[in-house]
Image (cartoon, rainbow, N blue to C red):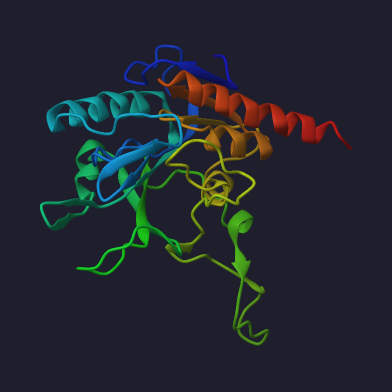
Length: 263
């Protein structure tokens, strides 16, 4: 199996990846919320182009069918002790919030270990409801009891540490992760309009894999999963249907190599 590669094709078929050969899958699928990614809008009208465009509006039946195919392949290639982490957010339709709990229907034979709330500080504004400042990350394991979880690699400093009560100054992070979204002044910022932060993926990969493990992202986008995997000495496999995003990813990956060789 070839690793450290991003395929230019849909992940609805991952014939390049053998059965039970991937340690961790982490991804953020298209939300299908009819946002005009890649355009600058004002009062609902496109005023300028600011990035590579992609469509985020499919017929719901087509969208659900696509996800079913992709997740079926994900389950096939995932090792018995592997995990899959899916970042997805609420939809807002016809004046009503629709939580993404429907994602669980694709993983009924898996175990939902955590529902992470990713909390961030800024985003879209609203005037008829509270401004949304979170997304979900669903963590499913293939086996209920046998799975990789490296708590010591993601422990955080305890604010109220007491040596008379606790053996360590470190504690288990909660299921609410306060990690900033990628803003325009971040060094990791690319031209991708829906980029998730490296810090979010770093915690997942550290907790769910060991060095040299294989991490797969079936919706690679700007390459954040691959970039973090490479930085942490893991192998990666990705799928992406937009050539410009693969070019973007490869530039980021090449820069890691340049940084490593500059010492």
